[in-house]
Image 1 (tube, one colour):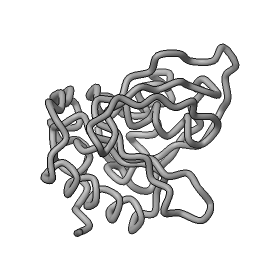
Image 2 (cartoon, rainbow, N blue to C red):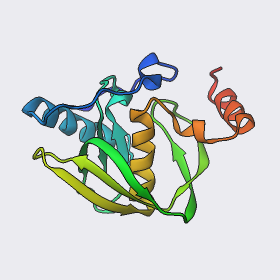
Image 3 (cartoon, rainbow, N blue to C red):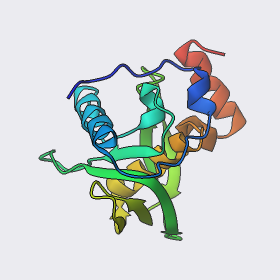
Length: 163
């Protein structure tokens, strides 16, 4: 297990939709382990494989207080999103030093291949739900600031020193 370096924004892979994972192998499990190590060092509550330069639909999420409860997901997809919305602060190690309040559904039902290669389904709320939505954005080549108005997004990127 090794922590990996997060790609700096703007890197092309961060704007490229990730490829579907055909099956869960020991190599995939090793990538998940590295992703969890990377997430813990950041520290963060989620990480998507493209953030560390791997163009596969892999994500990890751990919003637990005690840590060590990471959900390993391959090919995650949202099946249902609550109508109730919630605002929350989001940031990314790919664009350090800035963050923004983003409105997202308060809860989601997500379907994914788990570490045993079996389709799993979870209802995730609050920080867990926010994080999985954030990671799925990364897997689709989107950043959290794409959910902001153009003015807010431009201000955030200027503050980060990119544009």
